[in-house]
Image (cartoon, rainbow, N blue to C red; front, side):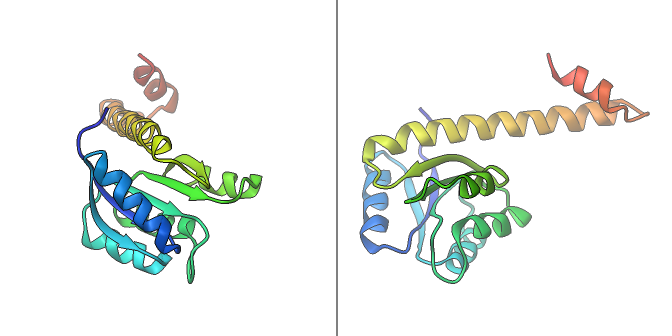
Length: 154
């Protein structure tokens, strides 16, 4: 499992925020900020350098996916979203953001650690691929996308 992470959580429901805080701290993580609206989530993520965001989708003022999009424009951070919906359009929107796991409410404490592990593992893979692509692009003067892809598939 991953070491202790700095996590920002956001949910419009006080009981869910308390559940997430208790569960995450029990697992050894540090909750660095708690938000109940999309704008608060954006503000907290800009104030605290988090390793991970766990957010509800349905929040007042600005939904969690829109907040993740705004956050990622300045500080890319992986996210896990929590929702009471399983709608395809919501899943599609989530797949276009920095969302690496999607949990459907009600969630249990045992749901969090595998989602966190998968999210952080996939995020590390994405960062590694970005670094390899940047290095390959720098080493190829003609910038051929085929050459860059071939050099990163090993």
